[in-house]
Image (cartoon, rainbow, N blue to C red):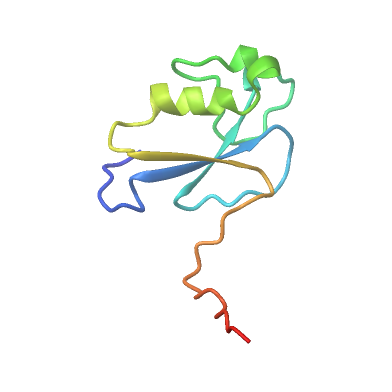
Length: 103
């Protein structure tokens, strides 16, 4: 990961996946295969089984293996880490909320 400067660059939202699907792979999203150490499937995205990890304990800790991996392996410049399950994304569009008119 290159040097991170802006707030958007200093935030990472891990998109946890355990089976093949389509992923957003643009900032702030970072797809990661959880439980890769105990999986027969390699999804072609980074896994939680590199560096300091607890990937082999995914059956007990589920997506927390990705958070542990992020804590121990992402650069210190990453200030905020979020977690999302595959197929569920946050909408960051700048759309104002609907106005609430009292009757």
